[in-house]
Image 1 (cartoon, rainbow, N blue to C red):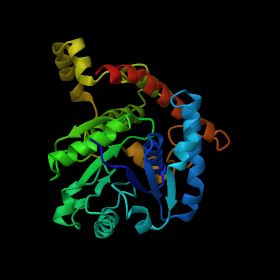
Image 2 (image 1 turned 60 degrees about the horizontal axis):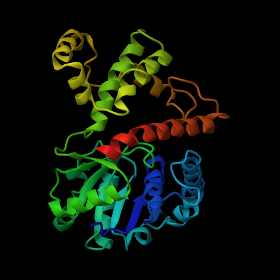
Image 3 (image 1 turned 30 degrees about the vertical axis):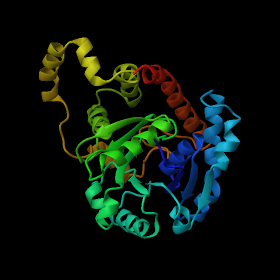
Image 4 (image 1 turned 60 degrees about the vertical axis):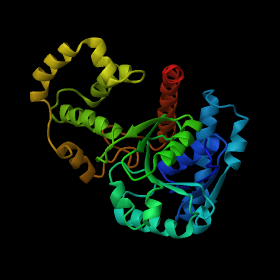
Length: 319
């Protein structure tokens, strides 16, 4: 049974505000903290817009919006945000020292039963919890979401720490209550599961662009209407079984030797970063983004994710 009722989310950025929205939609009392006063003063508008889009797409009833908004409380005082919470998720920058310092402070001021979670997918849990007490380490876990967290069904849960099984089950119950599909990760490896799969795809995508094999629009089209079309409702292992493992073995032998196997980011990607072409945040990445239409593009991106969510719900209801 889920005994966690009071939630805190640390960091009101892209992931944090979306995580807070997700919990608030399901009736949880949520404290959203950010050290940036300007961010805290404006983030409610983004949350409202996210909820309105979900209502527009018939994912939630519009009558839920006022209640969900009233479930979120905004803080710039960290202690005040966390002191009475049952479950705390940090979604602050991926800086180890900052996370260590934050969790050390939380350990000192929070209730004994409070569970601490990190949204990291690149830092080791053992390093993140290095400064907390041995007792608290038993109540720490990685809970890694995908963006946008209030739409994407997945959350990856670390099962490789020293958390007792009964506490881990409480965390599973919590995420089941907000309609998440949780993935139990048994080993502490960089990237966990989903990001490792995603990076393998991204490595080849960037390499294809670098080699001039196809234009960016066509590479995305190949993924969207090829592998990703199937992956919306099935997984790689089922796809392999359906196609025949003998075929997959033969194709692997033929293709893997000529595919990208580098162990660092693609030079093309690094060049764009050096040029300040970071994607939507700077107005240009692989594609260009007009500031006047950027909000609409983000909205359309979320709509597509919502449509994928609806397509996936058949599997989620019948698995």
